[in-house]
Amino acid sequence: GSSMKASSGDQGSPPCFLRFPRPVRVVSGAEAELKCVVLGEPPPVVVWEKGGQQLAASERLSFPADGAEHGLLLTAALPTDAGVYVCRARNAAGEAYAAAAVTVLEPPA
Image 1 (tube, rainbow, N blue to C red):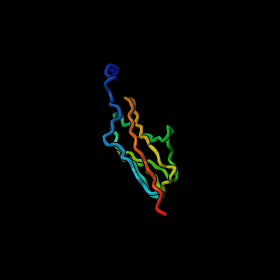
Image 2: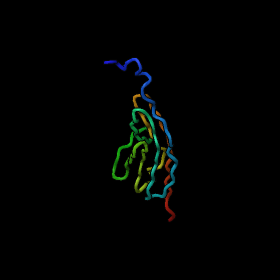
Image 3: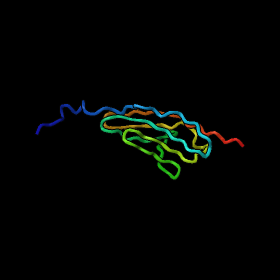
Image 4: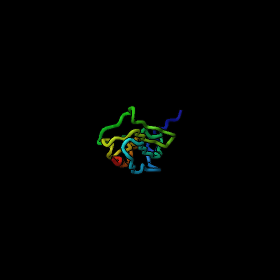
C-alpha cells in the first residue's frame, strides 16, 4: 500500500475559534453560560480553565457540547465563581485558546 508519510505535515488544521466566548454578568444564584465555536481537523479537544487550573464537571458546573459548539454552564453562580475563564482547544495540529470574564453581581438587599 502507499504510505501517507510524505504528506503528514500538511494533514489537519489547528484549532480555530469561529465564535469566541463573550463576557457574562450574572446575579448571584443565577445561571451563567459561556459558549464558543471551535473548528479544527481533527476536531479539537476542548477544556475550560480558571486561574491556571483545568475545571472539572460538578453539581453546578457542566460543559455542554454540540458539534463544534462548546459551552460552560454554571448554575447557581457564587461570588467565588467570578473571574476569567479560559477555553483551550487542542488537536494534533496545534492549540488555541480564548478567554471570557464572568462577573457575579450581588443581588440588591
